[in-house]
Amino acid sequence: MDPARRRQLIARYKDGPRVVREALDGITDAELDARPGAGEWTAREIAHHLPDSEMTSAIRLRRLLAEERPVLDGYDENAFARRLHYGDRPVGAALDALAATRTVTAELLDRMTDEEWIREGTHSESGRYTCETWLEIYAAHAHDHAEQILRARSARS
Image (tube, rainbow, N blue to C red; front, top):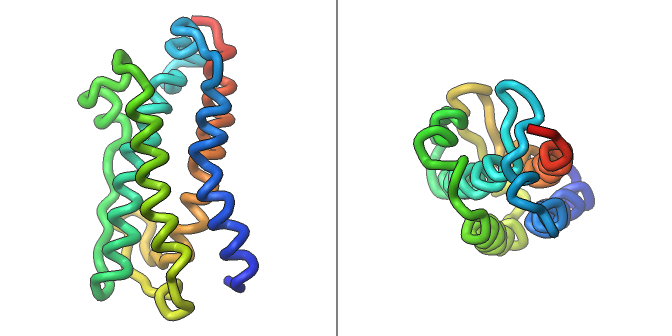
């Protein structure tokens, strides 16, 4: 990945909390809890998934940087949603956690060297996993979920 592409993805990563907050702006409780379809998450559930995923991803990046070829475990997102009370918690602190985690991780991204970007480990579900792989995934993650929130909030329960 060339440095210009990296800078573009880092900027998108940093913008993630803004697009999520924008997607939730003015949302009603009914919209927060509207389920767009069987097995799909509500906007509230997505809002709680984001910081949990973000904290997990932040540790993955740190392990890639600090350890030699770490094995990065996947996790059961649906179990997190069920067991961590995604369906009835307020979303304010979750959005703050998303923003804070992205801020401290962005500080690392801004300082990484070319050698650090190519460090790699193995993801338990997807195999070879580099810092660049990480960036490609998480630069899009919040934006993708912001779009999912917009779809979910317009659903009728």
